[in-house]
Length: 449
Image (cartoon, rainbow, N blue to C red):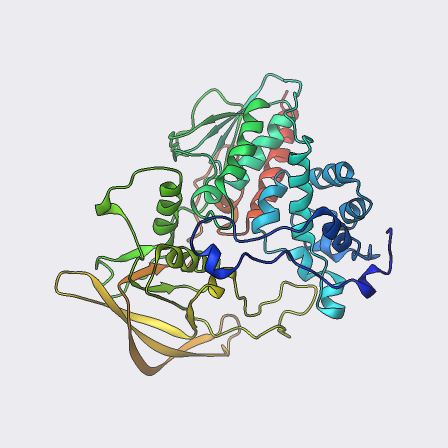
């Protein structure tokens, strides 16, 4: 490394978020950026560890020590080449990845100030776009067609890799835009959709064909392709089947998030179909990232108040001995959306929804629960305490995750990748899954020439 002792005198510095009062007034990205000089200084903190646990933790096998060194030296083209050798879409992961790499950084263990790997990654790809380094390339064609079903992160990665290998790739997308979860599940304040469009244009110029508004029944795949990659994600949200579920004003999280993204894209949604938090008491059921996205969206829509409840107990703050370094730490996470205004509560189970005479939700009866060790091992046992209360709510958003899809028995030339194969996971893992599926398809077809 250029400065092997930089970590001793240069503290971690994040770009941070725009001020709360400013960012809640729009759907622009909340995260700010550092200039190239400050970014190079942050990259210098990487110690080039003998065992790079950041590389070990990354599902894509990214090589942070190598591209950090290139950033520090000002060799942005070299950094770009290193990064894109393992990651098709750093502009996505650089914005929305939870940065497993940083949690396993040795500086996380020693001084709780890991290298700013995710932000550095985003800086590399944005510099590459700005300097004209990202240009459409041509690849020799081998005359064989592959279909990719679904255009989320796994589908895009599979299509990109197969196209680079010379296959004629057609991506079928059931919705009107390309992107899947990236497009409809992630708010613009975390990922502007122009970032997706920019990448899709390059892929189209390189030869990938996208067919939107084209749903495909995976049991009746389109003919004329040598192989297929199923990347349909996890379309079924986990429901909450308790009394009052049919009341108006109770929605799955993605109903709100997808509709808001469509509105921002310029689509006209009839007033009778709009889901709006304006002036309402919003209750988000589910404590994960999707719930957090609902909080940020509700605040931007003008909610009167927002509360998030979670059935599991509150995680430890800062450190959890049950998940020691270099594992992913299960600790309390406060997102940018939480900072914008939200009451958070834990260990609450929902018993029933309460409604008004005209059939609209007005509250939820919840009950405090305790979690006790299971004498047979495995998941702890939930024990109701009998302590019940009513939480008033005019809009309830269910953000409790997604059911793992059950796939039929496919022919040998059909491969499954991303959430469709594993159940709901991270975007970075979906990209890794798409890349792996593309390699499996290539191996399969080469063996059958």
